[in-house]
Image 1 (tube, rainbow, N blue to C red):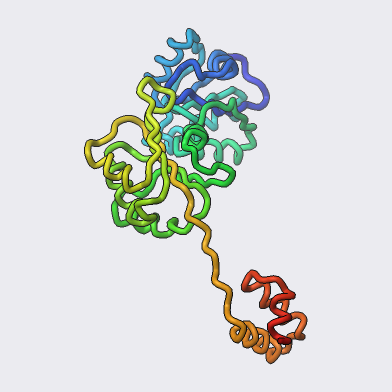
Image 2: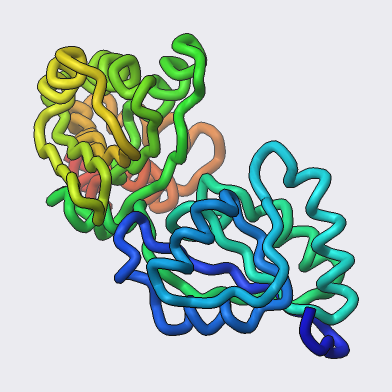
Length: 282
């Protein structure tokens, strides 16, 4: 390892999703300067470095779901000793449905600075390509593996008005799309993004029902990011005049002034205060 400093540093590297040309200049610089590079797949990192014509002089160690609990304290010891550790996953940003969160949390708890060399993200790339609203969205990561748990999660998300982004494995996408169509309705707009930035990149923009039929015809391959439109907003019906009068009277009986009672009822039903006032005094 190189010359250590008083305080080490953890650097999260945003790796290309598939096309090596997406690697930033800073990504290359960090790989060439880090004392330790913790990689989700060391073979894939070696291949990427070769494609980028980058030499990695630091020690390369594996850091993936199966060993991160054991390896995290080892890497924290290296960081506390004053060395620079770079963390890289197979694609995209560490910690985003990939190994990393555990190490970030442990480094921060140990007083070690954590920074990032931002790079590609499958979440925002798919969102931008989907053609669906992107001003408000939520990332749900991978759905539960078992059908019962997956359906329960989807029922809870069925009324979410923000655009939803999911990751899904190829061998589970057929079942996931069928459950999505059942929970959200077959006409809900969606986009299935497959093999982003790679040679066989494909973006299918279809309603969930059609995507479910497409997947059922043959198991899709490659890494999949699914973008689903949010639920249409629910517009509450305006209550009739008698209901509004009764709601105001109930609040007055509880000790509210008429002014406060009218204000509260208007807010509850999404009406203008003057509208409720006129009904009460009509």
